Every structure is written in C-alpha cells, then in structure tokens.
Image (cartoon, rainbow, N blue to C red; front, side, top):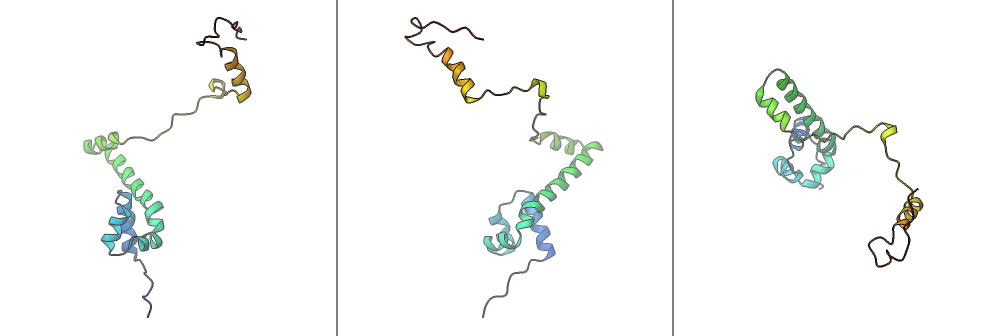
Amino acid sequence: MARPQYKPTAAQRRSVSIAAGAGVSHEEIAIGLGIAKMTLQKHFAYELTEGAYRRRQEVLEAMFRAAKKGNVAAQKAYAALMPKVAAPPLPPERQEVPEGKKAQAAADAKTAQAGTEWADLLPSVPAQ
C-alpha cells in the first residue's frame, strides 16, 4: 500500500516562511518539520522563496517603524544593514558611450609602438 501524499498545514507553511526568511537552511527546516529536504522543496516552494522574502520585508518594516518612534536598538540594527541600493543612473548628457570594437582597435593602433623597441623607429600619430 502506498504512503498517503504529504499535505502541509497552514501553521507549517507559516513556520517555513518565517524560518526561511531568517536564513535557516532548507535542510534544517526539513529536520525541524520531520520531513525530507526534497519533500520540503516540493511542497513549500513558495514559502522558501517569495514567502521568505515577504516575512523578511515585514520584519524590516516593523524595525523601521520602531526606529522612527525612537527605539535606539532598532535604529542601530537598521543602520547596520548593508544596503544593496544601486547608485542612480547618470543623466544622458553625462553618460559615456563606449566605443565600438573597430574604433577602439583604431585608437589602440595609434599608440601600439609606445613602450616597445619600435617606439624610436615609428612616428607617433597625433590624436584627433
């Protein structure tokens, strides 16, 4: 007789998303639930990914609210987080447009003799 299919409960789903959001490994979560790692990954895929991110976001929002209310511990914890924010893009007029391969090769060819034994024999081509 075949074993009945595993059916996760709402409490287990919540527990998995909280643990995954805190950075607990999949193997440790599976051990905590008493199931195989593959079973965890099959039945809790959402909780291990999006659910974990949502729980983490909830905690960050709560920490930020507490920090704004004057909670010094929350302020320090929030300030200690390493932001992964990209620098804002430069305005179009300040962005450098990379040269194409042919233009770069032509520019390199003008100074190819520099630093070699050919430097004295070949004339330098003035930059345009």
